[in-house]
Image (cartoon, rainbow, N blue to C red; front, side):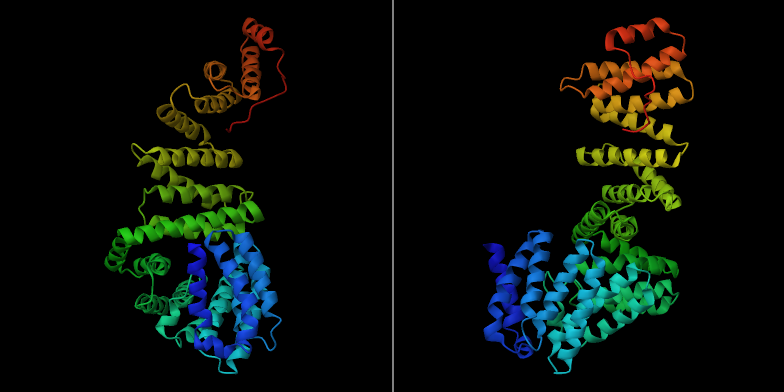
Length: 461
């Protein structure tokens, strides 16, 4: 009930009491009720992070508002919110169409002098569409949209710029994105001017500021203004900014991973994950959030058939440097460290990197220290290392590791999948056979049955 009350009050204040909206609606009394109910429900779903339900309800808002002729501001609002949900679900083309429709509606309403609220909605759609164009490498066209959005948003009184949870795109976003484009175009002076202008806005929240400061600091460093850049970084590491950075980083990580999982589109996921890494870097070079972002990027880039091999190798080196400086980690950090070593090992296997053995040895020691020498997680690494030993015909070393792994799994209290023991026995049998230890090989057959001799264990866990 709390969320519903908050959402209803928010909508009433922003959409129904606002005289600018009432003047934009042709039939405010007759048509609002059904649309308002759907909009409130969609907003509640969004607050509860039920994005699928929110998208469905915003789609119904569009349908409901299409019944009004001529169209009023509700159609533009509905289209903009639906587009933002479609972006979250990875449907960029549909979102682009919604933004374009919303812009068309706002342009028609502007001819009637509908007021600042129409300008605000149009600016949000211009920014949203611009971001989609940027993702498709259409930076010049995106820049033109950002410029239009800035011109429109600057006409709004400052109270109109604060927005609500649904108004994700705003003046600062347009300004920051346009500044980033100018940096790419080599227009550094204009980019600096845009960043400074955005940061001077009193309505700029900590969350919005987080989006701008990292890129601005990088630009200042590029221009040789290192002292001012250092002051910015110091400011960003304050407690309030740190909280906002963490939220921004975590949100982008989730969005990037969702795109990769649901859409299997690394090209779209990587820019989102890079944004998460940008925020995480401001939390500290050896912060666990930076490690998590590097891990996500390496895992994503591993799926691209070596297209991003060079970048992934660089991220792996950065992650390993980060690991070297993490002393006495707590349990959540220790989990991130282990996950990152696992990801790097998988990347090295994928790219046939000679550093695989060193990574596995490092992970073995880490698991022994943090999970105990008799942990089943230790046995997994022992099996992977033994496979590498076998490949280079170091049968004695492989046998030592395999016997230790077998002992761990046979004595594991919670039980273990039979395939793990079969993997060890199969490889150990091959080692004994190649090493001329027929009696030990026969003993394995007698105890565990004849292993599948053609079976080989691939390094990995």
